[in-house]
Image (cartoon, rainbow, N blue to C red; front, side):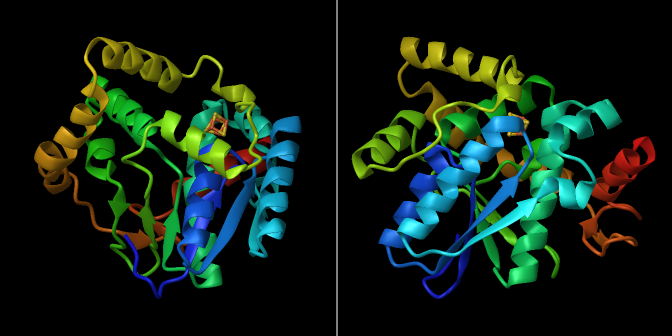
Length: 258
Ligand code: SF4
């Protein structure tokens, strides 16, 4: 995922997983900086930002903060209203774009996120349910850089369950935001997590087998299927598969609506 010498940008949300990840990397002596993306989601964003700032300053770490509204033209709840796109879809697109851009701008070759085994198994389940072959090809704990303007994305906690990262955070005394994002209520990813938890209860190890079986045996087939050439967006210069990237199109829609 990364070497000892590489600086790592850790994308932090203020939640237990990303702060646990940052804590482990600091403790292990890696050179890190945090990146907090301010989504502008009411009190949730204010509180989660405060948690990240307190975590970084207590450990003498650099924290970069990027406001989505400064780049897209509106905070996430307004982006949804302007574009009619599902909130989490607009949010996910913005986060992926801004993470890559921030890492490139500040000279970090790799971005680490706090996704755990439960997150990864639920994402895989959703992709399989709809046979989203493009998503299946990208489902990996370590996505390499396939273009000079694309940094690596890694998920070092992908072997650990949510319960384990929560236990670690508790034992380390990490002060994280307990409330979930208000837009996560009713999200299909939560329904998938519940289903997988029921499966896990009936058949311990099911989640692990599902995810690792896919990574070991099936992923390579989807990777071959979906390899697409990358170019640079004619507007912003970031990596895309077409002429204008999806993020610039989203920002255009928001501006037009405004
Ligand atoms: S739940 Fe949806 S809107 Fe909230 S942070 Fe996650 S992706 Fe963004």
